[in-house]
Length: 426
Image (cartoon, rainbow, N blue to C red; front, side, top):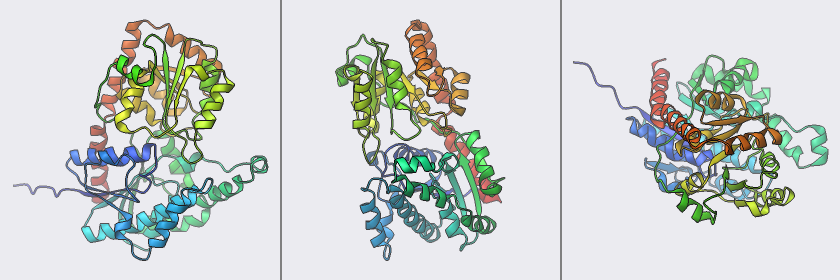
């Protein structure tokens, strides 16, 4: 009689779950998907999850396990409020969370630490690992440290506060850390997952290939659609008329998002309305987006909600919109998680031609593609979308469902389990 496999015990660690954007989404949905696939999973965060109502697995926070580290904990909370030095707070948060993770793993017998968002401080698990042995880690990489460049001298002269940011970028990518990588990787078992093949290639070349042979590409998963509302109800929520074309811009406004091109392109399409939901974090996006609306004479055709959008409110944005515009700078090569969100809501996309985003949109055809940072190209794509027949739009929506089905969270969790087993087998 075959001996049944022991249930995998995974400590899912997300130090930044209290920030908006993909951090909190992942902390809620990925552990839940793993639990649904038979994994005994526990969530560890620094100080909870923004969308905490959705967490359905056992969870704990750093503060409950701290003694000597309490002053650092409070320092991180203080520094987070200061514009321009948030990276210091994030470093302290990551440091304390990983320190506690090692303690919990040993005490409670978890097989693997699954670190969500190992960047920007990728050296931290290896700093700890250099003084440990036989640890098992799975670290997810978005690619931020591979694609972010330090500001140029001209940029620093124009904005002197960028000097601190430049020093930060150089420190996290310093070759000083290479010996820690090498030592840690020789003493422990690490695998790294990237969300697309482009970032996988970059990760394998990082710091003279120190991660080579240890990187796997695993695309994101789309969670199942919950609340469905009518377009009429969704438009009423924003005070939008039923008969105008509405284009959505959604999510955290990070440096890779190209918002100005959206305003420039819609300026000369008088029938189009822009709906935006999502914030820019510390410093705020409200004045920036409001100024763009004024600059491009879009004030009366823009609805801007500069705030974190909770999961329960997302359907109103997507169901109110005819399509979502995914506009990114040419340099942005990380995975565009909003493609997964759009397809989950059957919302056609108009996407810039960035790396994997272009490949996926052209392969699965959930919408149209335009040239990144080219307002004329985006305007042409918007006009083309407005001329589509109802049957053509319906086909895009069907393609959205096909995409969301193929890249579901269930499939993601199943592949994760296979990776866990690979780590434990070697």
